[in-house]
Length: 388
Image (cartoon, rainbow, N blue to C red; front, side, top):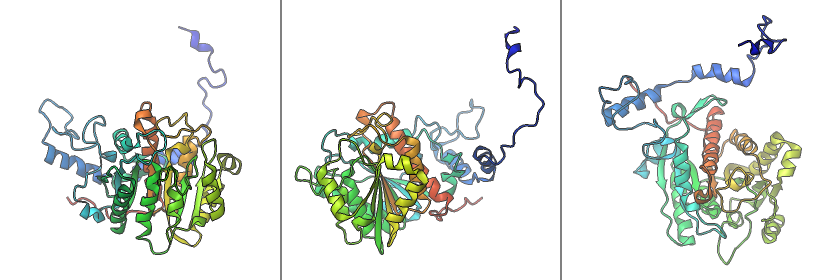
């Protein structure tokens, strides 16, 4: 049993002073968790026992377990709203909430691989893997925001009618002062979602768009498809194309007709190579400067295929050479520091996914944006502490 006695001759049983790591982010986060409240979690547990009955007598730890599940524990069961937040059946009361998650199960705007109509289901399902607390950001969404899931917008089998439904739904949420977090759905929904927001904004709206594809064609196969949202969105009176900034564009699936429209209209494009060269911080700076120039609000569009296809197989148009997940998340957080009026996550196609990794990244993007906005004071205010 002496084989280990020759290990680490310069470190074995040393008594030197340890390096000072107190100012590293990991240690700051370790300390910061102690300052976070837990009132909302305790209230959820209390309510779960009231509504779901006390647990069986044989269960020894009765602190958080009810008979019928009414909290987000355990993650593999229960009703799959996003993050297991409350389902809001009466959307007329959406204004009582800071954030509303909404699904748009629509994929008849796809030009190749369908399946994104199952995106909201996939994202909700895997989101149960997450808690509401993020270590690095030091935010517990449950304790900071009043959140709900309003379910899905009814999308009939018609592009124009579905787009009208989407516009009405998004405008309803946003007009009540609630942040819409939209789970697509193919990227054609970008147009009606932005239209719904633009109807409610006083002033101009900028768009920050992460994608491998420009999506600025006027038509595709004689329809407004998922290659067309930003041509039509930037035709809106208060959504100028000069406030459209597109990050990650490149590869072999960028139609020249869309490139021509972007050039003619003066939109801004940074490729992955540009972003590698100038860095994430400069990329975020440029994106914010372009999108916010003369604008009073910014809409955030995250197409999951902006990430390298090796990380997101569950999408309709996979393209190698995109962002690393870490890069995409850093850009999203950088944009969210200044605040957004709505966010869409699109092109998640669970039928092509592997182990839900594409849906998981979509869910991660959503909660990272919310936590960043919370940390920087860009959202929140409707949550009331539980009364004793």
